[in-house]
Length: 160
Figure 1 (tube, helix red, strand yellow):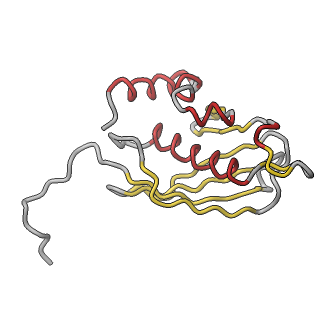
Figure 2 (cartoon, helix red, strand yellow):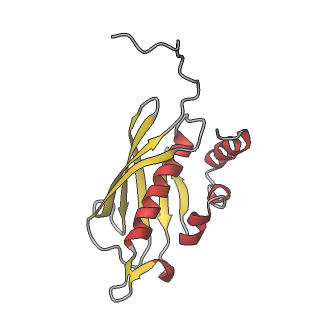
């Protein structure tokens, strides 16, 4: 269960459009330098260029794990803010397609909620540098969520 203080902090961050206090609670977000800003009704995630995130120094190119971690964390933060789950979403599956090299420059990501069921939510994430029409990676994430109200059960299996 997500405690009331965290839910209040999420709501305040979204109302003010300042997600820094929320990101400060996540050590990995600080390690790779993730930033988040509201863009209309949507969120835009930013991974600032940092030599610490380079995997191939010859190009130089971002480490694939950093790109994947950035996109997974963006999806989870997106769900924390926009879903009605009473708990922190738990990752079930994450699949990424690397489309081109992520060079050492700012990287952006946006999320799209594909489907939110009672227990599982599907989120698509697109990451790019420069032009959003030229993504460096796309990903699909499935998360387990908990509904706000517990599902009612009679103790009997569902009838056909």
